[in-house]
Length: 382
Image (cartoon, rainbow, N blue to C red):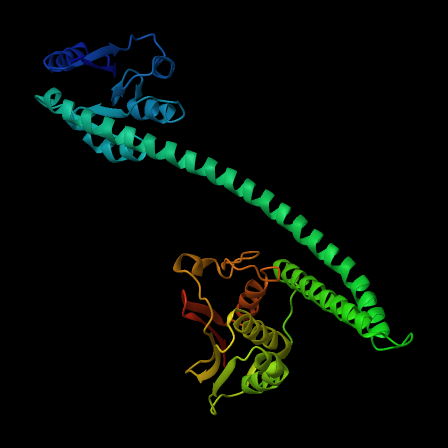
């Protein structure tokens, strides 16, 4: 096995001290101590910096100065190892100051001090290298953090560019779609003359397409407002049961046309809450529309409200195809559809619902099982 070499610089001008240390170090197996010592006319700071010693043994008492002065200068050098102070017993009171100034340890030169010096050097080397490794890791972490922050700023800029682009495009679509729908409606209702059955069928189809495109545009605008922090809530006292009842009337024909069964259980003790009525309506309508979309004919949709201690809770349950466990955590992600069946839409409905609920400081979650349907829950604070 190759012998380990440790470079040691002894800053002491008393030859008997140097000889004692050299003799003690020469008896250590598997480790070679390459010992250097300072000549009177050599610059201590220059030698310590240029030759990169593993450990420096610095005497407190030096001709014309004390070791603490040298220690102070060494703190500004890039050292390769720790500094250990040496002193005679009469100078022992220097030790606290030496430790504060950067020494890793100190040794009082009493009889046999050179034997204990080996253990102190070993411990100081371990402490020094541990500190340097910690500093290296901290610098590496700081550099990685800086890189991540720069990358994050870039992503935020790109995200803003994307959001601005989506918003601008959606706004550009909105006005032409409104004009197209108005013109088609006018023709469909006979405003420009009688309309044959075949013509009416085509015009009805065109209106349905325009309505679908309008919904997509509105979804994109909502997402853009949410991402830019521009969606504002117009809060007022609202009755969640009333919102549900009014919208169930609107959907009644569509539910019956699909031969779906509707069950409702609205708690009578639900208090009015402070919320944005239009936005809460949007949340409920989206969940109800999804329930209708994924529930087969003769399936059941259930609506329930519950008065909790600090919140009101709405539950919308369907008997549709359900969602696989692996996809449940993706169901509120933007532009993500977790069902294999192709459905119309942007995949933005549930993310918008989640953001609206969050803006109200509420909660939303889902439970589902493949083949047995899904249960969506949301709460709003009282």
